Amino acid sequence: MPANRLPKINELVRKYVNDIILKELSLKSGVFLTIAKVDTSPDVRYTRVFVSVFPESEFSYALKTLEKERHNIQLSLNKKLRIKPLPRIEFRSDFTESEADKIEKLLKEL
Image 1 (cartoon, rainbow, N blue to C red):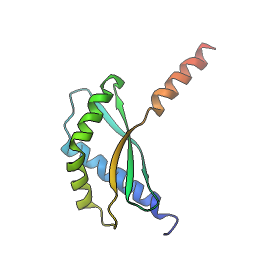
Image 2: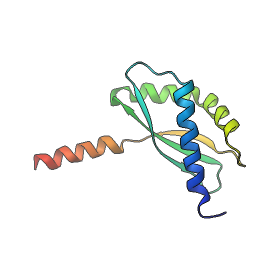
Image 3: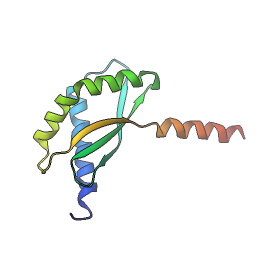
Image 4: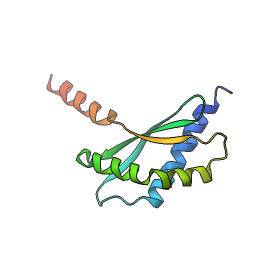
């Protein structure tokens, strides 16, 4: 497999899943969901979509909604991707930004 194939697949999955979530998923008012990172396995059978949610207190709600709609998101993604095999999506949490904020606050206190 070419070395630059996985980054291209990751970017395509990120773009398409983002579009699908914006158009087809309805979250509560005031809840913002961002795709932080996409990580596809080397055999292209699985892809992990890391999401961050604002406000953090709504994270469990957003993740439950994504899991409930995962099948529909997967079907829409499969229609858009033109690769074989089609990667199976899995949603994961990304707390990188909140952890960075905590570290920044600690550094300011010093």
